[in-house]
Image (cartoon, rainbow, N blue to C red; front, side, top):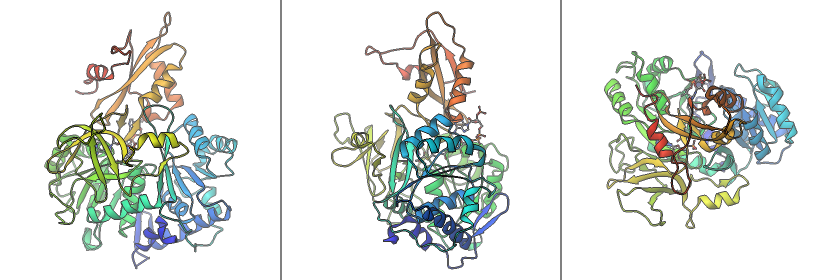
Length: 521
Ligand code: MCA
Ligand code: AMP
Protein backbone atom coordinates (compact mmCIF):
# COMPACT_ATOMS: atom_id res chain seq x y z
CA UNK A 1 0.00 0.00 0.00
CA UNK A 2 1.47 3.34 -0.99
CA UNK A 3 -0.62 4.74 1.93
CA UNK A 4 1.94 3.15 4.25
CA UNK A 5 4.60 5.20 2.51
CA UNK A 6 5.39 8.10 4.82
CA UNK A 7 5.43 10.41 1.82
CA UNK A 8 1.78 9.61 1.00
CA UNK A 9 0.74 10.69 4.49
CA UNK A 10 2.76 13.90 4.29
CA UNK A 11 1.44 14.62 0.79
CA UNK A 12 -2.15 14.01 1.92
CA UNK A 13 -1.71 16.79 4.47
CA UNK A 14 -0.71 19.42 1.89
CA UNK A 15 -3.34 22.17 1.94
CA UNK A 16 -6.07 22.46 -0.71
CA UNK A 17 -4.57 25.69 -1.95
CA UNK A 18 -1.45 24.27 -3.55
CA UNK A 19 -0.36 27.73 -4.68
CA UNK A 20 0.10 28.87 -1.07
CA UNK A 21 3.64 29.32 0.20
CA UNK A 22 5.00 26.13 1.81
CA UNK A 23 8.58 27.25 2.38
CA UNK A 24 10.05 30.73 2.47
CA UNK A 25 13.81 30.86 2.65
CA UNK A 26 15.90 33.23 4.67
CA UNK A 27 16.98 34.93 1.46
CA UNK A 28 13.45 35.50 0.22
CA UNK A 29 12.74 32.55 -2.10
CA UNK A 30 9.25 31.10 -1.92
CA UNK A 31 8.24 27.52 -2.75
CA UNK A 32 4.56 26.67 -3.06
CA UNK A 33 3.08 23.33 -2.04
CA UNK A 34 2.80 22.59 -5.74
CA UNK A 35 6.53 23.32 -6.14
CA UNK A 36 7.31 20.80 -3.39
CA UNK A 37 5.08 18.23 -5.01
CA UNK A 38 6.36 18.67 -8.56
CA UNK A 39 10.03 19.07 -7.79
CA UNK A 40 10.10 16.05 -5.47
CA UNK A 41 8.28 14.08 -8.21
CA UNK A 42 11.00 14.98 -10.70
CA UNK A 43 13.77 13.88 -8.37
CA UNK A 44 11.79 10.73 -7.50
CA UNK A 45 11.43 9.98 -11.22
CA UNK A 46 15.17 10.38 -11.66
CA UNK A 47 15.76 7.92 -8.80
CA UNK A 48 13.14 5.53 -10.22
CA UNK A 49 14.79 5.73 -13.66
CA UNK A 50 17.97 4.25 -12.20
CA UNK A 51 16.16 0.90 -11.95
CA UNK A 52 17.28 0.18 -8.42
CA UNK A 53 15.57 -2.34 -6.20
CA UNK A 54 13.15 -0.71 -3.76
CA UNK A 55 14.85 -0.06 -0.45
CA UNK A 56 18.17 1.01 -1.99
CA UNK A 57 20.13 3.43 0.15
CA UNK A 58 20.56 7.05 -0.94
CA UNK A 59 23.43 8.58 1.04
CA UNK A 60 23.41 12.37 1.16
CA UNK A 61 26.06 14.80 2.40
CA UNK A 62 25.01 18.24 1.23
CA UNK A 63 24.60 21.72 2.68
CA UNK A 64 21.13 22.56 3.97
CA UNK A 65 18.78 23.70 1.23
CA UNK A 66 15.13 23.27 0.30
CA UNK A 67 16.33 21.06 -2.56
CA UNK A 68 18.06 18.80 -0.02
CA UNK A 69 14.69 18.41 1.73
CA UNK A 70 13.09 17.67 -1.65
CA UNK A 71 15.68 14.95 -2.18
CA UNK A 72 14.60 13.42 1.13
CA UNK A 73 10.94 13.49 0.07
CA UNK A 74 11.86 12.10 -3.35
CA UNK A 75 13.75 9.23 -1.76
CA UNK A 76 10.65 8.30 0.25
CA UNK A 77 8.43 8.67 -2.83
CA UNK A 78 10.67 6.41 -4.87
CA UNK A 79 10.64 3.78 -2.09
CA UNK A 80 14.30 4.09 -1.18
CA UNK A 81 16.08 4.64 2.11
CA UNK A 82 17.48 8.05 3.05
CA UNK A 83 20.88 8.17 4.71
CA UNK A 84 21.76 11.70 5.79
CA UNK A 85 25.35 12.56 6.70
CA UNK A 86 26.66 15.49 8.73
CA UNK A 87 28.37 18.02 6.44
CA UNK A 88 31.31 18.17 8.85
CA UNK A 89 32.29 14.54 8.24
CA UNK A 90 35.66 14.06 6.57
CA UNK A 91 36.93 11.30 4.28
CA UNK A 92 37.61 8.56 6.86
CA UNK A 93 34.16 9.06 8.37
CA UNK A 94 32.41 9.13 4.98
CA UNK A 95 34.35 6.07 3.80
CA UNK A 96 33.07 4.14 6.80
CA UNK A 97 29.42 5.10 6.29
CA UNK A 98 29.48 4.39 2.56
CA UNK A 99 31.35 1.13 3.04
CA UNK A 100 28.91 0.02 5.71
CA UNK A 101 25.62 1.11 4.15
CA UNK A 102 26.53 0.30 0.52
CA UNK A 103 24.34 3.02 -0.94
CA UNK A 104 23.28 2.71 -4.58
CA UNK A 105 23.21 6.50 -4.85
CA UNK A 106 25.43 9.09 -3.22
CA UNK A 107 24.68 12.81 -3.39
CA UNK A 108 27.30 15.31 -2.27
CA UNK A 109 28.16 18.95 -2.79
CA UNK A 110 30.00 19.87 -6.00
CA UNK A 111 32.96 21.04 -3.94
CA UNK A 112 33.39 17.55 -2.44
CA UNK A 113 32.50 15.59 -5.57
CA UNK A 114 36.09 14.58 -6.31
CA UNK A 115 36.91 12.80 -3.06
CA UNK A 116 33.40 11.64 -2.21
CA UNK A 117 32.80 10.06 -5.63
CA UNK A 118 36.18 8.31 -5.39
CA UNK A 119 35.16 6.74 -2.08
CA UNK A 120 31.70 5.87 -3.40
CA UNK A 121 32.80 4.27 -6.67
CA UNK A 122 35.45 2.28 -4.82
CA UNK A 123 32.73 0.97 -2.49
CA UNK A 124 30.59 -0.08 -5.44
CA UNK A 125 28.10 2.79 -5.58
CA UNK A 126 26.79 3.12 -9.13
CA UNK A 127 25.45 6.67 -9.08
CA UNK A 128 27.00 9.82 -7.63
CA UNK A 129 25.32 13.19 -8.10
CA UNK A 130 26.15 16.67 -6.92
CA UNK A 131 23.74 19.07 -5.23
CA UNK A 132 24.74 22.55 -4.14
CA UNK A 133 22.92 24.96 -1.87
CA UNK A 134 22.40 27.39 -4.80
CA UNK A 135 20.10 25.00 -6.73
CA UNK A 136 22.87 23.80 -9.05
CA UNK A 137 24.43 20.37 -9.50
CA UNK A 138 23.97 17.25 -11.58
CA UNK A 139 21.08 15.92 -9.46
CA UNK A 140 18.80 18.81 -10.40
CA UNK A 141 20.10 18.95 -13.98
CA UNK A 142 19.19 15.30 -14.44
CA UNK A 143 15.89 15.62 -12.55
CA UNK A 144 14.85 18.50 -14.83
CA UNK A 145 14.59 15.98 -17.68
CA UNK A 146 11.93 13.99 -15.83
CA UNK A 147 8.17 14.31 -15.45
CA UNK A 148 6.71 16.26 -12.55
CA UNK A 149 4.15 13.52 -11.91
CA UNK A 150 5.18 10.47 -9.92
CA UNK A 151 3.36 7.40 -8.64
CA UNK A 152 4.46 6.95 -5.02
CA UNK A 153 6.17 3.60 -4.52
CA UNK A 154 4.23 1.11 -2.42
CA UNK A 155 5.81 0.67 1.02
CA UNK A 156 4.69 -1.23 4.09
CA UNK A 157 4.84 0.33 7.54
CA UNK A 158 7.70 -2.04 8.36
CA UNK A 159 9.83 -1.03 5.34
CA UNK A 160 12.86 1.16 5.93
CA UNK A 161 12.56 4.90 5.32
CA UNK A 162 15.89 6.09 6.71
CA UNK A 163 19.13 4.97 8.30
CA UNK A 164 20.73 7.30 10.83
CA UNK A 165 24.23 6.54 11.96
CA UNK A 166 24.84 6.81 15.68
CA UNK A 167 27.80 5.62 17.72
CA UNK A 168 27.93 3.45 20.74
CA UNK A 169 30.31 3.37 23.65
CA UNK A 170 32.58 1.01 21.78
CA UNK A 171 33.15 0.06 18.18
CA UNK A 172 32.11 1.81 15.03
CA UNK A 173 28.98 3.78 14.28
CA UNK A 174 25.77 1.82 13.93
CA UNK A 175 23.06 2.58 11.40
CA UNK A 176 19.71 2.90 13.17
CA UNK A 177 17.05 1.58 10.78
CA UNK A 178 13.85 3.63 10.96
CA UNK A 179 10.75 2.46 9.16
CA UNK A 180 7.94 4.36 7.48
CA UNK A 181 5.74 3.23 10.38
CA UNK A 182 8.20 4.48 13.03
CA UNK A 183 8.39 7.95 11.53
CA UNK A 184 4.75 8.30 10.61
CA UNK A 185 3.45 7.24 14.02
CA UNK A 186 5.78 9.74 15.70
CA UNK A 187 4.83 12.57 13.32
CA UNK A 188 1.09 11.98 13.74
CA UNK A 189 1.32 11.78 17.48
CA UNK A 190 3.41 14.96 17.80
CA UNK A 191 0.97 16.84 15.57
CA UNK A 192 -1.74 16.15 18.14
CA UNK A 193 0.39 16.37 21.27
CA UNK A 194 1.93 19.71 20.34
CA UNK A 195 -1.48 20.93 19.13
CA UNK A 196 -0.34 22.06 15.69
CA UNK A 197 -3.05 24.33 14.36
CA UNK A 198 -4.28 25.15 10.87
CA UNK A 199 -6.35 28.12 11.96
CA UNK A 200 -4.42 29.84 14.77
CA UNK A 201 -0.89 31.10 14.27
CA UNK A 202 0.16 34.42 12.76
CA UNK A 203 -2.69 36.19 10.96
CA UNK A 204 -4.94 33.21 11.73
CA UNK A 205 -3.35 31.21 8.91
CA UNK A 206 -2.13 28.29 10.96
CA UNK A 207 1.18 27.50 12.58
CA UNK A 208 4.38 28.65 10.89
CA UNK A 209 7.63 26.92 11.83
CA UNK A 210 11.04 28.56 11.91
CA UNK A 211 13.30 25.80 10.60
CA UNK A 212 16.73 26.63 12.00
CA UNK A 213 18.41 23.24 12.47
CA UNK A 214 20.56 21.08 10.21
CA UNK A 215 18.65 18.41 8.29
CA UNK A 216 20.93 15.44 8.79
CA UNK A 217 19.62 14.49 12.24
CA UNK A 218 16.31 13.50 13.78
CA UNK A 219 15.56 16.96 15.18
CA UNK A 220 15.78 19.00 11.96
CA UNK A 221 14.90 16.25 9.50
CA UNK A 222 12.03 14.47 11.18
CA UNK A 223 10.68 16.41 14.14
CA UNK A 224 10.76 19.77 12.36
CA UNK A 225 10.08 18.89 8.71
CA UNK A 226 7.48 16.19 9.37
CA UNK A 227 5.89 18.42 12.00
CA UNK A 228 5.28 21.23 9.51
CA UNK A 229 4.40 19.08 6.50
CA UNK A 230 1.92 16.82 8.28
CA UNK A 231 0.04 19.90 9.42
CA UNK A 232 0.28 21.63 6.04
CA UNK A 233 2.23 24.38 7.81
CA UNK A 234 4.54 26.87 6.23
CA UNK A 235 8.24 26.80 7.12
CA UNK A 236 10.55 29.77 7.34
CA UNK A 237 13.76 28.14 6.23
CA UNK A 238 17.09 29.23 7.68
CA UNK A 239 20.02 27.70 5.82
CA UNK A 240 22.13 28.43 8.87
CA UNK A 241 21.04 29.45 12.34
CA UNK A 242 21.61 33.06 13.18
CA UNK A 243 20.17 34.34 16.47
CA UNK A 244 19.33 37.86 15.25
CA UNK A 245 17.55 36.61 12.15
CA UNK A 246 15.74 33.86 14.03
CA UNK A 247 14.34 36.46 16.43
CA UNK A 248 13.35 38.72 13.53
CA UNK A 249 11.48 35.81 11.88
CA UNK A 250 9.36 35.39 15.02
CA UNK A 251 7.17 38.30 13.85
CA UNK A 252 5.84 35.94 11.18
CA UNK A 253 5.99 32.56 12.88
CA UNK A 254 4.49 30.59 15.73
CA UNK A 255 6.70 27.53 16.40
CA UNK A 256 10.46 27.32 16.99
CA UNK A 257 12.51 24.17 17.58
CA UNK A 258 16.10 24.23 18.74
CA UNK A 259 18.87 22.57 20.65
CA UNK A 260 19.72 24.40 23.91
CA UNK A 261 22.70 26.23 22.31
CA UNK A 262 20.28 28.06 20.00
CA UNK A 263 18.30 29.32 22.99
CA UNK A 264 21.50 30.38 24.79
CA UNK A 265 22.59 32.33 21.72
CA UNK A 266 19.20 34.03 21.29
CA UNK A 267 19.22 35.03 24.95
CA UNK A 268 22.42 36.98 24.28
CA UNK A 269 20.50 39.19 21.80
CA UNK A 270 19.02 42.46 23.11
CA UNK A 271 16.26 42.15 20.47
CA UNK A 272 14.75 39.18 22.33
CA UNK A 273 11.79 40.67 24.19
CA UNK A 274 8.04 40.03 24.59
CA UNK A 275 7.20 42.18 21.55
CA UNK A 276 9.54 40.13 19.32
CA UNK A 277 7.79 36.89 20.27
CA UNK A 278 4.20 38.12 20.37
CA UNK A 279 3.10 35.87 17.46
CA UNK A 280 4.86 32.81 18.84
CA UNK A 281 2.87 29.91 20.27
CA UNK A 282 5.47 27.28 21.09
CA UNK A 283 9.19 27.03 21.79
CA UNK A 284 10.50 23.45 21.79
CA UNK A 285 13.94 22.34 22.99
CA UNK A 286 15.68 18.98 22.88
CA UNK A 287 18.65 16.85 21.75
CA UNK A 288 20.63 17.85 24.84
CA UNK A 289 19.80 18.87 28.40
CA UNK A 290 18.30 22.36 28.70
CA UNK A 291 19.83 24.06 31.70
CA UNK A 292 17.27 25.28 34.23
CA UNK A 293 18.91 28.72 34.06
CA UNK A 294 18.20 28.90 30.31
CA UNK A 295 14.63 27.72 30.90
CA UNK A 296 14.05 30.42 33.55
CA UNK A 297 15.82 33.22 31.68
CA UNK A 298 13.70 32.47 28.62
CA UNK A 299 10.57 32.74 30.74
CA UNK A 300 11.73 36.07 32.16
CA UNK A 301 12.74 37.57 28.84
CA UNK A 302 9.85 36.38 26.67
CA UNK A 303 7.02 35.31 28.95
CA UNK A 304 7.10 31.91 27.20
CA UNK A 305 7.84 28.57 28.82
CA UNK A 306 10.06 26.35 26.71
CA UNK A 307 8.67 22.86 26.14
CA UNK A 308 11.50 20.34 26.61
CA UNK A 309 11.24 16.92 25.04
CA UNK A 310 13.53 13.91 24.77
CA UNK A 311 14.35 11.58 21.91
CA UNK A 312 17.00 9.51 20.18
CA UNK A 313 18.02 8.61 16.64
CA UNK A 314 16.80 5.08 17.37
CA UNK A 315 13.39 6.14 18.58
CA UNK A 316 12.56 9.66 17.38
CA UNK A 317 10.58 11.41 20.15
CA UNK A 318 9.96 9.58 23.42
CA UNK A 319 8.78 12.05 26.01
CA UNK A 320 7.52 15.60 26.06
CA UNK A 321 6.42 18.22 28.48
CA UNK A 322 2.75 19.03 27.97
CA UNK A 323 1.66 21.50 25.34
CA UNK A 324 -1.91 22.25 26.20
CA UNK A 325 -4.31 21.11 28.90
CA UNK A 326 -5.95 18.73 26.39
CA UNK A 327 -7.58 16.12 28.68
CA UNK A 328 -6.66 13.32 26.24
CA UNK A 329 -2.99 13.81 27.01
CA UNK A 330 -2.10 16.07 29.83
CA UNK A 331 -1.88 14.46 33.20
CA UNK A 332 -0.61 17.89 34.20
CA UNK A 333 -0.44 20.98 32.04
CA UNK A 334 2.67 22.42 33.65
CA UNK A 335 5.94 22.43 31.64
CA UNK A 336 8.49 21.64 34.25
CA UNK A 337 12.06 22.87 33.70
CA UNK A 338 14.73 20.25 34.25
CA UNK A 339 12.35 17.46 33.22
CA UNK A 340 11.62 16.03 29.78
CA UNK A 341 7.92 15.59 30.56
CA UNK A 342 5.77 12.49 30.10
CA UNK A 343 6.18 9.44 27.90
CA UNK A 344 4.35 10.31 24.67
CA UNK A 345 1.08 8.48 23.95
CA UNK A 346 1.90 4.98 22.75
CA UNK A 347 5.38 5.01 24.31
CA UNK A 348 5.99 2.74 27.30
CA UNK A 349 8.86 3.92 29.46
CA UNK A 350 10.31 2.24 32.51
CA UNK A 351 13.30 2.74 34.77
CA UNK A 352 15.27 -0.35 35.74
CA UNK A 353 18.05 -1.10 38.16
CA UNK A 354 21.21 -3.11 37.53
CA UNK A 355 19.28 -6.23 38.57
CA UNK A 356 16.84 -5.68 35.64
CA UNK A 357 13.98 -5.01 38.03
CA UNK A 358 11.60 -2.07 37.61
CA UNK A 359 12.44 0.67 40.10
CA UNK A 360 9.91 2.44 42.30
CA UNK A 361 8.86 6.04 41.61
CA UNK A 362 11.72 8.48 42.15
CA UNK A 363 14.52 5.91 42.02
CA UNK A 364 17.30 6.43 39.49
CA UNK A 365 18.10 3.76 36.89
CA UNK A 366 18.39 2.93 33.20
CA UNK A 367 15.60 4.22 30.96
CA UNK A 368 14.02 1.60 28.69
CA UNK A 369 11.36 2.25 26.06
CA UNK A 370 8.95 0.47 23.77
CA UNK A 371 6.53 1.78 21.16
CA UNK A 372 5.64 2.11 17.48
CA UNK A 373 8.40 4.70 17.12
CA UNK A 374 11.20 2.40 18.27
CA UNK A 375 13.53 1.44 15.43
CA UNK A 376 13.84 -1.89 13.72
CA UNK A 377 17.45 -2.52 14.64
CA UNK A 378 20.99 -1.62 13.63
CA UNK A 379 21.87 -2.05 9.99
CA UNK A 380 23.56 -5.42 9.48
CA UNK A 381 24.37 -5.73 13.20
CA UNK A 382 21.94 -8.31 14.59
CA UNK A 383 24.11 -8.99 17.65
CA UNK A 384 24.37 -5.31 18.56
CA UNK A 385 20.62 -5.00 18.06
CA UNK A 386 19.95 -7.96 20.33
CA UNK A 387 22.26 -6.52 23.02
CA UNK A 388 20.33 -3.26 23.11
CA UNK A 389 16.89 -4.83 23.60
CA UNK A 390 15.56 -6.64 26.66
CA UNK A 391 13.96 -10.04 26.27
CA UNK A 392 10.52 -8.42 26.53
CA UNK A 393 11.25 -6.00 23.70
CA UNK A 394 12.25 -2.78 25.48
CA UNK A 395 15.08 -0.71 23.99
CA UNK A 396 17.82 0.25 26.44
CA UNK A 397 18.38 3.95 25.82
CA UNK A 398 21.66 4.24 27.74
CA UNK A 399 20.18 7.27 29.48
CA UNK A 400 19.86 7.28 33.25
CA UNK A 401 16.86 8.88 34.86
CA UNK A 402 13.82 8.73 37.09
CA UNK A 403 10.07 9.22 36.97
CA UNK A 404 8.40 11.23 39.71
CA UNK A 405 5.03 10.57 41.34
CA UNK A 406 3.28 12.82 38.78
CA UNK A 407 4.84 10.96 35.87
CA UNK A 408 7.45 13.54 34.82
CA UNK A 409 10.65 11.96 33.51
CA UNK A 410 14.00 13.49 34.44
CA UNK A 411 17.27 12.50 32.80
CA UNK A 412 20.08 12.65 35.32
CA UNK A 413 22.95 11.21 33.30
CA UNK A 414 24.05 8.60 30.78
CA UNK A 415 25.46 5.15 31.21
CA UNK A 416 26.95 5.51 27.70
CA UNK A 417 30.20 7.45 27.46
CA UNK A 418 28.87 10.27 25.31
CA UNK A 419 29.39 14.01 25.11
CA UNK A 420 26.56 16.09 23.66
CA UNK A 421 28.06 19.27 22.31
CA UNK A 422 25.72 21.88 20.85
CA UNK A 423 23.29 19.04 20.11
CA UNK A 424 25.86 16.89 18.29
CA UNK A 425 26.98 13.60 19.77
CA UNK A 426 30.67 13.06 20.33
CA UNK A 427 31.89 9.65 21.41
CA UNK A 428 35.05 9.84 23.56
CA UNK A 429 35.99 6.29 22.54
CA UNK A 430 36.26 7.38 18.90
CA UNK A 431 38.41 10.43 19.69
CA UNK A 432 40.61 8.45 22.09
CA UNK A 433 41.09 5.84 19.36
CA UNK A 434 42.45 8.49 16.99
CA UNK A 435 44.68 10.08 19.66
CA UNK A 436 46.08 6.74 20.79
CA UNK A 437 47.16 5.96 17.24
CA UNK A 438 49.46 9.00 17.24
CA UNK A 439 53.09 8.01 17.47
CA UNK A 440 54.04 10.15 20.45
CA UNK A 441 51.00 9.12 22.49
CA UNK A 442 50.85 6.31 25.01
CA UNK A 443 47.24 6.75 26.00
CA UNK A 444 44.47 9.28 26.40
CA UNK A 445 41.10 10.04 27.91
CA UNK A 446 38.45 12.42 26.58
CA UNK A 447 35.84 13.76 28.96
CA UNK A 448 32.93 16.16 28.65
CA UNK A 449 32.84 19.33 30.72
CA UNK A 450 30.29 22.12 30.99
CA UNK A 451 30.50 24.89 28.40
CA UNK A 452 28.46 28.11 28.36
CA UNK A 453 27.66 27.97 24.62
CA UNK A 454 27.71 24.29 23.59
CA UNK A 455 26.41 22.94 26.92
CA UNK A 456 29.16 20.37 27.03
CA UNK A 457 32.50 20.06 25.17
CA UNK A 458 35.32 17.54 25.09
CA UNK A 459 38.66 17.93 26.88
CA UNK A 460 41.50 15.55 26.02
CA UNK A 461 44.05 14.33 28.55
CA UNK A 462 47.07 12.77 26.90
CA UNK A 463 50.04 10.79 28.20
CA UNK A 464 53.15 10.70 26.01
CA UNK A 465 55.23 7.66 25.17
CA UNK A 466 58.19 7.37 27.58
CA UNK A 467 61.05 9.50 26.33
CA UNK A 468 58.95 11.57 23.92
CA UNK A 469 57.36 14.96 24.21
CA UNK A 470 53.76 15.37 23.14
CA UNK A 471 52.59 18.70 21.84
CA UNK A 472 48.96 19.24 22.88
CA UNK A 473 48.32 21.64 19.98
CA UNK A 474 49.74 19.14 17.51
CA UNK A 475 47.36 16.49 18.86
CA UNK A 476 44.40 18.78 18.23
CA UNK A 477 45.70 19.77 14.78
CA UNK A 478 46.07 16.14 13.76
CA UNK A 479 42.57 15.32 14.98
CA UNK A 480 41.25 18.27 13.01
CA UNK A 481 42.75 16.90 9.82
CA UNK A 482 40.87 13.61 10.25
CA UNK A 483 37.60 14.21 12.06
CA UNK A 484 34.48 16.37 11.82
CA UNK A 485 35.29 19.73 13.45
CA UNK A 486 32.61 19.54 16.18
CA UNK A 487 34.28 16.36 17.52
CA UNK A 488 37.60 18.06 18.20
CA UNK A 489 38.18 18.53 21.96
CA UNK A 490 38.21 22.23 22.80
CA UNK A 491 41.33 21.78 24.96
CA UNK A 492 44.10 19.21 25.29
CA UNK A 493 46.42 18.72 28.25
CA UNK A 494 49.49 16.53 28.47
CA UNK A 495 49.42 14.73 31.82
CA UNK A 496 51.73 12.34 33.66
CA UNK A 497 49.00 9.86 34.59
CA UNK A 498 45.28 9.19 34.52
CA UNK A 499 43.33 8.32 37.69
CA UNK A 500 42.33 4.64 37.71
CA UNK A 501 40.16 2.48 39.91
CA UNK A 502 41.24 -0.86 41.33
CA UNK A 503 40.12 -2.57 38.11
CA UNK A 504 42.49 -0.32 36.15
CA UNK A 505 39.64 1.61 34.52
CA UNK A 506 40.16 5.35 33.98
CA UNK A 507 37.99 7.26 36.46
CA UNK A 508 36.45 9.77 34.12
CA UNK A 509 34.24 11.15 36.88
CA UNK A 510 37.38 12.41 38.67
CA UNK A 511 38.66 14.01 35.45
CA UNK A 512 35.29 15.67 34.84
CA UNK A 513 35.40 17.03 38.38
CA UNK A 514 38.98 18.26 37.96
CA UNK A 515 38.26 20.15 34.74
CA UNK A 516 34.66 21.16 35.41
CA UNK A 517 35.34 24.91 35.64
CA UNK A 518 37.64 25.12 32.64
CA UNK A 519 35.17 27.04 30.48
CA UNK A 520 33.06 28.64 33.19
CA UNK A 521 33.73 32.24 34.10
C1 MCA B 1 30.17 24.03 15.68
N1 MCA B 1 31.28 23.88 16.42
C2 MCA B 1 31.03 23.07 17.43
C3 MCA B 1 29.69 22.71 17.29
N2 MCA B 1 29.18 23.31 16.20
N3 MCA B 1 31.78 22.62 18.44
C4 MCA B 1 31.22 21.79 19.31
N4 MCA B 1 29.93 21.41 19.23
C5 MCA B 1 29.15 21.84 18.23
N5 MCA B 1 27.88 21.47 18.14
C6 MCA B 1 32.58 24.52 16.22
C7 MCA B 1 33.18 24.14 14.89
O1 MCA B 1 33.94 23.01 15.07
C8 MCA B 1 34.00 25.36 14.57
O2 MCA B 1 35.22 25.27 15.27
C9 MCA B 1 33.22 26.51 15.16
O3 MCA B 1 32.38 25.93 16.17
C10 MCA B 1 32.37 27.24 14.15
O4 MCA B 1 31.65 26.29 13.37
P1 MCA B 1 30.23 26.64 12.77
O5 MCA B 1 29.75 25.49 11.98
O6 MCA B 1 30.27 28.00 12.12
O7 MCA B 1 29.37 26.73 14.07
P2 MCA B 1 27.95 27.27 14.30
O8 MCA B 1 27.27 27.57 13.01
O9 MCA B 1 28.02 28.33 15.31
O10 MCA B 1 27.21 25.97 14.87
C11 MCA B 1 26.76 25.84 16.15
C12 MCA B 1 25.37 25.23 16.13
C13 MCA B 1 25.45 23.86 15.43
C14 MCA B 1 24.40 26.14 15.36
C15 MCA B 1 24.92 25.10 17.55
O11 MCA B 1 26.37 23.05 16.12
C16 MCA B 1 24.12 23.20 15.32
O12 MCA B 1 23.36 23.48 14.40
N6 MCA B 1 23.79 22.29 16.24
C17 MCA B 1 22.53 21.56 16.20
C18 MCA B 1 22.77 20.11 16.13
C19 MCA B 1 21.47 19.30 15.96
O13 MCA B 1 20.63 19.63 15.14
N7 MCA B 1 21.31 18.27 16.76
C20 MCA B 1 20.14 17.42 16.73
C21 MCA B 1 20.56 15.98 16.78
P3 MCA B 1 36.60 25.65 14.59
O14 MCA B 1 36.44 27.07 14.18
O15 MCA B 1 37.59 25.42 15.67
O16 MCA B 1 36.72 24.70 13.43
S1 MCA B 1 19.12 14.94 16.78
C22 MCA B 1 19.07 14.35 18.35
O17 MCA B 1 19.92 14.54 19.11
C23 MCA B 1 17.89 13.67 18.87
C24 MCA B 1 17.45 12.44 18.44
C25 MCA B 1 16.89 14.61 19.47
O18 MCA B 1 16.48 14.38 20.60
O19 MCA B 1 16.61 15.61 18.81
P1 AMP C 1 21.27 10.84 19.24
O1 AMP C 1 22.29 9.81 19.34
O2 AMP C 1 21.63 12.01 18.40
O3 AMP C 1 20.02 10.22 18.87
O4 AMP C 1 21.11 11.46 20.69
C1 AMP C 1 20.25 10.89 21.61
C2 AMP C 1 20.62 11.28 23.00
O5 AMP C 1 20.45 12.69 23.18
C3 AMP C 1 19.72 10.68 24.03
O6 AMP C 1 20.04 9.33 24.31
C4 AMP C 1 19.94 11.60 25.21
O7 AMP C 1 21.14 11.24 25.88
C5 AMP C 1 20.14 12.94 24.53
N1 AMP C 1 18.96 13.81 24.61
C6 AMP C 1 18.02 14.05 23.69
N2 AMP C 1 17.10 14.93 24.16
C7 AMP C 1 17.49 15.24 25.42
C8 AMP C 1 16.97 16.09 26.44
N3 AMP C 1 15.89 16.85 26.26
N4 AMP C 1 17.64 16.13 27.62
C9 AMP C 1 18.74 15.40 27.83
N5 AMP C 1 19.28 14.59 26.90
C10 AMP C 1 18.66 14.52 25.72
